[in-house]
Length: 200
Picture 1 (cartoon, helix red, strand yellow):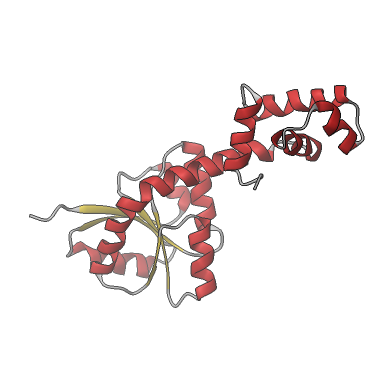
Picture 2: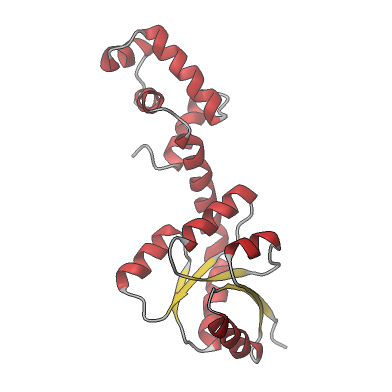
């Protein structure tokens, strides 16, 4: 007997949401429908993935929410007649697949199976990247410059010469940078910066 799978569907369009639930009900997929991301956040789904309508900043918002929660579910974006640019943007933002709605239940099932294998590893990468970005975002411009200098292996004196500040000021920025990033040592700060794609 085929294993019954589950998916959360976030769609502000009531008719389409109902049509999707009805369409997938006859297949091996159980649907948890949500009208908004806020509704989903209030009652976190016990599903294998989230299928989200690609509108506005929905994917980025969901990635941010999962980063805050420290919980990851693969995202499958969907839209009616999306452009190639829109699909690329969604995938770059963190979607593991993109479906054109309306589609057959078999396509949703295929996306779910694909999300299972790709979702965990990609999810962990995206989650770490998003967490790292939020930690780097709290740094001032000067602290980021000091971090870049540290990553290049430069001493406080050399960084100070480059930024036209004293080595002592570099040391203060460096200490503040570590505190804000929650890093115990410089190598951890560099790793976080790399995960945040701050450093090439």
